[in-house]
Amino acid sequence: MRKLCLFIATSLDGYIAKPNNDLSFLKLVEKEGEDYGYAEFTSSIDTIILGRKTYDYVLKEIGTSHYDNGDRDVYVITRTERPQQGRTIFYTGNIAALINRLKSEQGKNIYCDGGAELIDALLQQDLIDEMIISIIPVLVGDGTRLFKDGRPEQTLEFIEAKTFETGLTQLHYKRKKE
Image 1 (cartoon, one colour):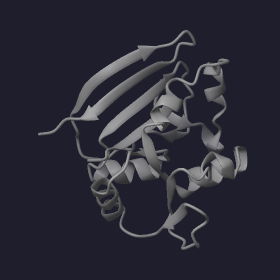
Image 2 (cartoon, helix red, strand yellow; image 1 turned 180 degrees about the horizontal axis):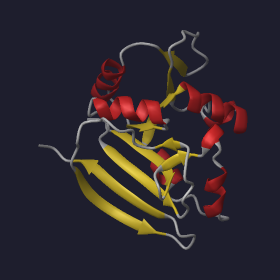
Image 3 (cartoon, one colour; image 1 turned 90 degrees about the vertical axis):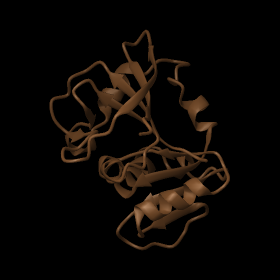
């Protein structure tokens, strides 16, 4: 069965973006030739799910090539219906129904690329199977929190921790089956 995996970076104090969607703190750990396992991770997936705000940000900062590379399906969770563009589907339906359908299909794993609203919706319904969270060694003080308050408690099983010369620490957990 396919798994839904979160792969994301956060500040030590739990923010995935500073105010105004400022991600400049991620540059603190940029290092030539170091991708922190991203290429290996993305080789294990064939579907990406992300929120519309994250999609718009990536399009503005990187361009369509980041998602529209022809070898994976992309589901943008949005409240506004839009026509499909290549393998990018703008999905307005029930998120649990989509995830459960995707998990039941043949294929590689599913990558949740953010943002905070989508992650919260997925956690509210206990749909995330694994989390790989890279902790950037900075306290940003304010912005968009990775985890919102008010979600159900979930027990996780530790898989591994990796440390890097830049000070980044990467934590890998999976959902503990009751």
